[in-house]
Image (cartoon, rainbow, N blue to C red; front, side, top):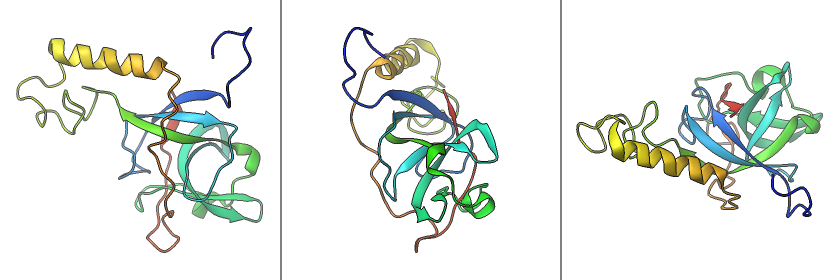
Amino acid sequence: MGDPGRAAAGPPLGVAEVVGPSMVPTLRHGDRLLVRYGVPVRAGDVVVLRHPLQQDLLIVKRAAGRRDGGWWVLGDNPYAEPDSRQFGAVPEELVLGRAVLRWRLLGGPGTGPAGLGPAGRGRPGTGGRGLFAAVLRAVDRAVRALPVRIAVLRPRPAPGTGTGAGAGKSGRAG
């Protein structure tokens, strides 16, 4: 990421796309995440990791805390699965990075042209098509290309640690 002749400014950044409902309400299907790979993880962080039973699959979960054998990870949605309740603690080496920024593809599936919810909740009649939606998608592509270091995903107590439980397959590298 960047000029190979220059020294790296910090941990590598990447983009992941959320697939599925396991992190609702924090993240929704189609959300994009800016991920800092190789950084320390704290309890409450949203993390990208390799599924411990299917390591070619990347998933997005909340790090609930350390247990014997690694990180206990849970989804924010109590009705989706799997998570550590099914596969146990995830070894440290499978936790790849921490999500620091979330954005929605403007005008994409499940959003109106302003990225505010279902089509029709933005400007009436546009449904994610037309010049306005095309401009918003171009802006989204430009944002994905920037080396942004804005942390809007803040650590919080994970479900199952006094506030409920959650689970699920929710992210793939995008």
